[in-house]
Image (cartoon, rainbow over all chains, first blue to last red; front, side):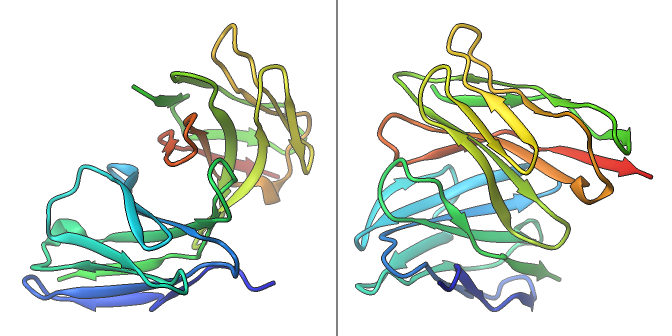
Length: 112
Length: 112
């Protein structure tokens, strides 16, 4: 069974640009969550989608957005990148509520 | 609200030493509790879980018991190995199962 895949694995952007990250959950998993991981702030919850609907959103500015497609694949977008957006972005999926989340390897975003 | 508090790191131990990483939580209702491990350059992997009071989760020699009376879920291992060097995250899933709350992570280094 394939795991959670995230593309790209590494990304370098400059301030002001925008970026789109992709996450393919494990087949059959309907919940997809996104997290930002930085050395200073640790793991911070961005948002969670279930069957194409955003159910929860963390405390991030509107520059951070996401969506989920009918095949459960999800994308997150960050517009007008700032230096502080440099982080490891982790995607996690689970079959149903209360199931443990399975994490992907992450996308390492560097903003110059 | 819901939150998880982990002991501060980093923790450095000699091989075969006993490991305890403390984790306490605040939650409404009956959360599920988890320990995740992150090896360098990788995403988070589920290490063990417990879904109700007095449950003991165990995996790869690690154990944690869900203690409702002390709101704790401490991670223990009797004899650590160099390969256990990683960052360990305690997490809870609230009663809805929609959202996970992570601790700040505890870095463990095991030296030969």
